[in-house]
Length: 357
Image (cartoon, rainbow, N blue to C red; front, side, top):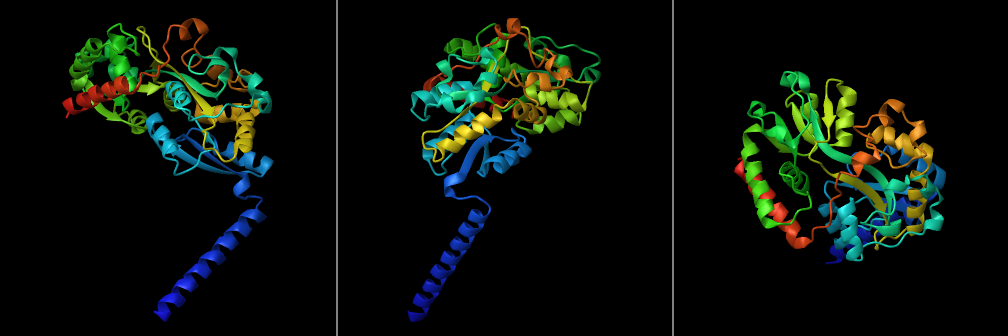
């Protein structure tokens, strides 16, 4: 028993020494619990050089974690195991988080660079007056394809994907809203439709697409398209931009029936511990030069109008990725469908995926 007590004391003392050493090391580097910022963002969705620059300028240590879906992000924040100071949800999830009291209002007086944001992307229905969120990136959902692999075939419509000549050529993203939205749009319905008959009709139509589907995947779609293992992909515009940068043969189109116009915004969760540093970081990201540097890496469309003159005109002048207002007005933003409707979307999407196996 005496040896056990001695061992326990030794372990406690060793832990204390290690904790003290780590604390001193962090302090020597200018970091402490009071000036640490924890960011929760999508994978590969920021230029890490920008984070290093922020750390050097402010002395705030950034801890960066990633998620792969809005739902996973929200669940982690609700559980509270890790305290996040900044998160980057999409528009419909922001609406949901506001209603569930998961966000704190922003102090606009601490965000002077907010004036750099294009007015088109401010005061949107999911967050009137931008009380809780600040635009980060935006884009569309569409089709990237390789005409040379399709004998020069041009794709302009969602319905083109059902062509029997496209057997085993299509990659779909593993997302219920994107895939169900595609099917709904192809039938002339809204991608926010909640009519059960319309949703069943969309699911039945998706089932008929199965012979043309090579896989339903996540980030792997980039590699598969890049390696020409598939000719067509349902993708977000930024993914298409990255692929087209590597392969000039590729094309990207927003189908004529319509599609999704999405926004990812920075927010401060209610459980944040470093609200001051969170405002500092958001304002830093909104700086024109920082936004331009970040945009060059991420490849999605920036809402920062002050950053646009600093970017390659070949990119910002490309209407596939910076569509004019007359086109964006025809696209739909995902709405918060509510738990019951979202569960039904997910149920139908899962049935569709099982149908293809």
